[in-house]
Image (cartoon, rainbow, N blue to C red; front, side):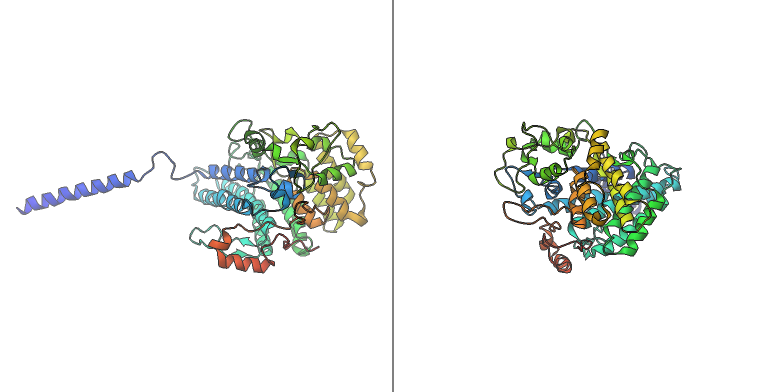
Length: 479
């Protein structure tokens, strides 16, 4: 009898284990990966970053309006400096934190877990360096939009109400991270591979230049508020080696076929929103005041009388009556620019003028304008005529105006850079919206949800920066 009982217990136990195994197996998703190779996370984050910078969808990105390169026709809230209507701050916040920084964090963890068979130590170091460079770019973009933002706690899934941190402190931290990333790159080894690295095709030397150029930008943003750190960053970047021509540009190669096309094509053509965008009178007037031949490359020649801009932030701008975007900039495979040689040369001109580095400011200034003309395909004769104009000729006594105006003009279609640098250099003074008389904002507003779901930290951050207001200046904007 005892033997029969033991046998029954054994059978029941085996059945229970079998059932438990079956239950666990049912919880396994056999169609979707439970672990993702870090190269795919890296590529996904990189594409999302490029899309954010290139996007013209005013649910996701306001910079082409806020830089005054375009204004709207029917829906004028965004060109009237109203980011709350569509909670654009929330869209940018979600994209940078969840679709870019979180993916890069997971990619970093995946790289560190790779064994020697899958990647050598030099390859892993390169991969981590590439990730860090994109992280720094993303963090700077957040700070330059909002000011103080969640940083140390931001990507911790266990901290649902992350504290905001001081923007200047974040800048210092990402500067350290960038320096580490650049020093860890080894051009003699590969990184994620050419297929995964859509930006530079696994050219580690190119990544090193990109990192140094980004370091230069970080340094120059700090020039008025932290001269010591600015000098360290700028001299270090120049010593490493920054972009030397348009061939070095950090240009993301979008595809000519869906779903990897330029997002501006998606919005203008697929979604048929191009009729919401017209040239602004503010920028058209700037271009005409310099007799700038790039006007024909920036905008379409759809108006027989010439190039005409609509009243910035004004109601009643009919699409047919004003100049439109040049169709070239919203073709499916038009590249998305993260950073270019033109910006680098303007930064170098300023660095020389400020006495941070040696050299000739005028040479860098001319190089910057020249590279912009070359990028847009403007001829050499037109360039020579343009550079000879007294309004364009470099003047060290008025360097902020000279560099500020020319950099603003050259930053067309890179709205965030144009808007940001105009605030930092104070040239030009961007337009007041005609519809409501609101002046050009100094920052984006925090996401609407933050005041509800993270109220204590939101209130503390708003108080620390001087209020969650459009007029509140960023920490580096002291002029």
